Length: 238
Image 1 (cartoon, one colour):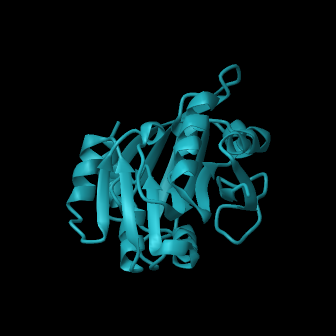
Image 2 (cartoon, helix red, strand yellow; image 1 turned 90 degrees about the vertical axis):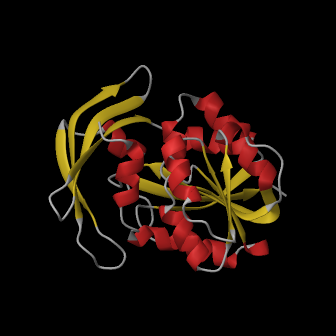
Image 3 (spheres, one colour; image 1 turned 30 degrees about the vertical axis):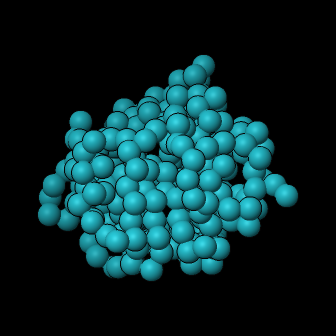
């Protein structure tokens, strides 16, 4: 499989990524805590909007890419999101790139959300990206899709192959192949938890958070059963 840092560095900013920037601009304090920042695709957009960003990542190669941004409003933190220490409050806590799906179980998801809630301003919000649970359950053995860059640049074709569902463990696994306009093909291994709305509401509640809004693959569209991704907005309970 391709090193994830190489893949993430090539992925374009998508139409749905503008949602995070709009939320951050409207949030108190002008400060974003980004958990699982990867190589900084969203980080760069947030910095470009004039926001302060605390980007949390633990993968060494991705940390190297984040640090290379070398921006005065960027603080890069090497840490496991579940073990995040104390720090300044953020008006927006962002969990992009299906971070919760990557975690091994509900207990790990509760720990990450509890850490996120501790750092969220009382009038702030938490935004997360989640792979659509019904899409994961119904993932065919082979399928194709396309990523459309927000700037209108060349699209990226995505092929899903070898999909299998672990019904007992509630996880979906497959190989994702990304074909770029220059002919480069990079592959990634999907190993994602199927997180139902009931479980999500449960782990959010355990962290002292409540759901504000639910969206589909591209906010403000509402979620539907065929969506590859969902976007969820939550806030600290009063």
